Image 1 (cartoon, helix red, strand yellow):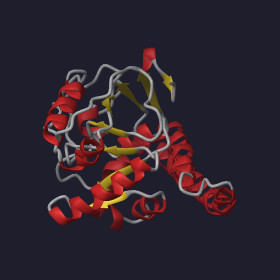
Image 2: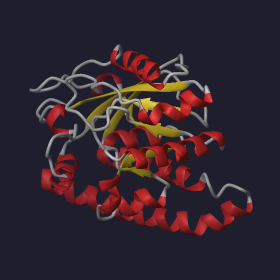
Image 3: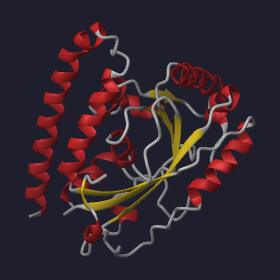
Image 4: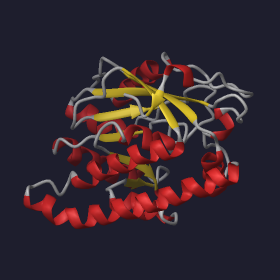
Length: 267
């Protein structure tokens, strides 16, 4: 049954991705005529993410209202699923580690939709990406940053790095925040090991395992009050406190599923 589920979902994902890619490419010139070329990829990414949510059997509980457009949003980082979860709810672009650009298919799609790739260990590249974030914020385009710098296993929220928060601090704009958590249903491996993507786990085996699951649940809490600080390190500490205060650790072992109080892709 699990292998049948894998085949069906992989087929649906491939077909959906191809169809929406065609729509993206054909619609780009039309979007340009209406001055929407810059945001067209983000819009289509949202459509693709909403479809992928259904394909994966991801049941979502949303608490609070997503932020307005044209802001910087930060969140804790557990998995590549975080991107799907957020993109399905607001048009945005993401900052991702440079290695993703070279991944088959995923890297191509990420480049196509305007992902900002960064080599975090190179100060010059951090400055370059910071300038790009500033430009997008000035143009009223939403940018999502995962300040932990890497995905974690959900035991807690790692300290936030402040470097990519510099544009918001310098511009004096409020930064919005969200807290993400996953749960797996009874009989499945705990979300800590099946949904969270951390350590040295390879992407392909992990994603195939995700496609085999009967489903899983996500809870995303959007903070009501954005944080505004002129110092990026103070901003990082305040945002970390806001996100961590709402985070419930994801333990090893079987999870208690959210299925009974959520519905597929609910919002």
